[in-house]
Image (cartoon, rainbow over all chains, first blue to last red; front, side, top):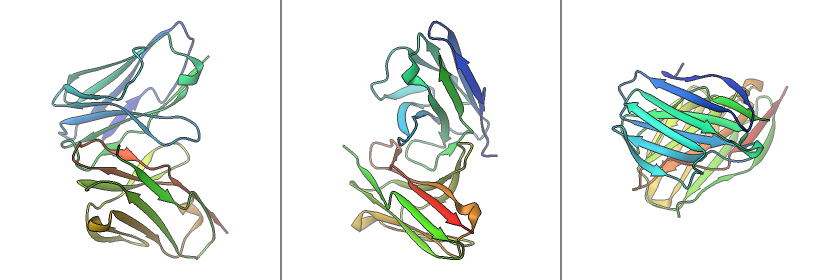
Length: 112
Length: 108
């Protein structure tokens, strides 16, 4: 256990569905991240939040909408996704940006 | 932009052999981490090593920040060491960027 918990672990959704991924950490960290890992590709940084403020949006399509209500929780709201969005979505947290990061177990998303 | 390159991309070892994985990065380093990704996708922290040398059991890592590379050493490899090893690096921007990974297979 890394102290970063993601739910659900697996998700299958249709292209017209709306769903949300949740990430929670009680490590007292101030920075939280979303990464996407597609098959046969390295991890791609999607969003960064530092003290609840978004500091990085790596040209992510608007069908992915992050939300950080407090420093312990991070959500990724999904709507009208495409099959190519199927991937492993990983959340991470760190005490601050640029410091050692810890990852959750990931959510394996399949869009049908 | 920031680049992180790992080598080799794939590695097959016989159990008991030693190996060295390399990570080259393109900018001055604030954070350098090595991870092992298990078959279920979980990223396991191996080392946080922006500079210097650390050891943890059969694993050790060295980062030479002035020459912009890091090495991960695996000694007396075991089948449970199989998986993908990632190097991740952040420079002045604070963004943690991952290399493409090294896929290691240890055969009994």
